Image 1: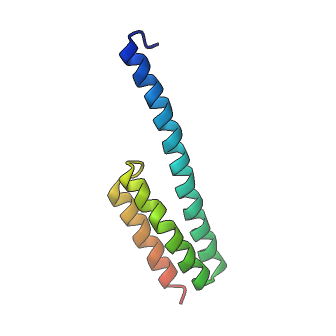
Image 2 (image 1 turned 90 degrees about the vertical axis):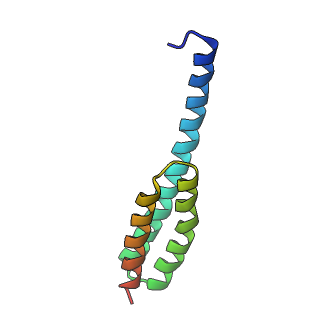
Length: 87
């Protein structure tokens, strides 16, 4: 348990940051799931639209420090190649 005022404040900040990051991660996972479902359905137009909607969320996750840049780049590359292969 935090005893000093500084440690108490850091604990509060960590809780707030954890909640925000959890919300961001959840939103990104939802967007990725929509892309996966569109790919599974075999509809390239829907999959491309879902990928285009997911891209800004993924990049926002990078800038906010939720995901590493290379992780997002790898996910985007793999998803875009799978969407392209639907044609």
